[in-house]
Image 1 (cartoon, rainbow, N blue to C red):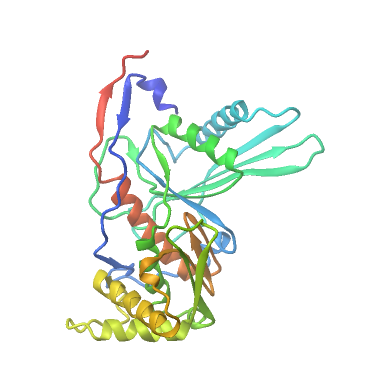
Image 2 (cartoon, rainbow, N blue to C red):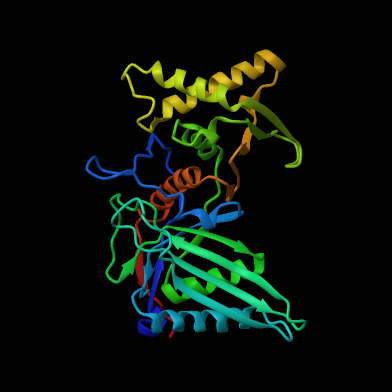
Length: 337
């Protein structure tokens, strides 16, 4: 169960995760001979909640096919977390289960998600959620570095107390010889996510309401910001106009995105804002987007749409793979026993 019990002399190091500049993105899920996937039911339990997005490197020694071993993982995790969060008259309960309800998944190689929950029972019998996390794979079909006895669940959605999240991630890292790192949405990520979420789909809710962009002003405190509002339908029309003007004659519904389209889209928005209000948004940093069914800032997301969540998971799964699974890992021998 605990990889360090098997080989205590092996340590794994990697270069600092760096995100390369994205050139394109494709949200198409299925092959031509497959039916369209419907994620409405499988992702329903994740909707309407605020989740923190983390990336997870390869997990070593994790066994998913044994209920006995899964209970041992839960016991180990509960004991370790309890020792890291010592509170008088508080008992902890931990569940470590395979989440069979999230199916179908985008790729045949995507392993079943793992759900981890830890609750604390207080002296007054009040039960408090310390940690809920779901490690999952959402289209892991790009070339990666492979190691024997490792599995890949590149993204982790979690919620709970800050101390609980920190403790659980430290213990999981020790148990499965992995690294768990935040995946904050950079300004570049936010710019990509706007057209990805707004791209035409069968969900007519996506074209209602307005979209808010929150910008951080350079040289001022983080609390000083500029918020702009745009009609959702107007943004969809603008995006369609941008991609229809492409010389490659791209079908606007084929769900493929190029960096030049994203850059042109925001250049037009910024030019319009400069003409209307005199604001130089190009000199500010985009830090938050709020859509009718989706909100994201840093590594926190919340959505009420299964289709939007599917697209966001595809995006961050690819980001995690590029940052954490395509690096040069180096094995060294530790001098400690």
